[in-house]
Length: 92
Ligand SMILES: [Zn+2]
Image (cartoon, rainbow, N blue to C red; front, side, top):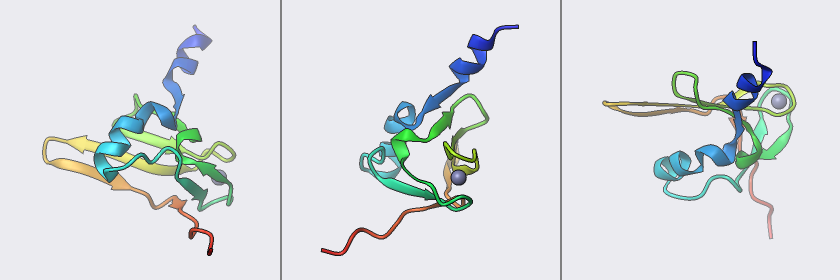
């Protein structure tokens, strides 16, 4: 029984920055995302990342709701962002 192993499985969104950049064509780690469940706003790079699940899962740091799910298969990349709302940019 090693607790360290569990810790190893949980990273932050920066750990998947490369994958997100491949998908979005831009650095997503500084983009603000709002949890659709509890409303917490966090940078994508600050979300909890579980990269050893089938695919990549990014969860809210407050309530652990799944915010972004990424599955890469030989047929293509599937991104599920149902748990996440990106706030409108501030009006200038
Ligand atoms: Zn939340």
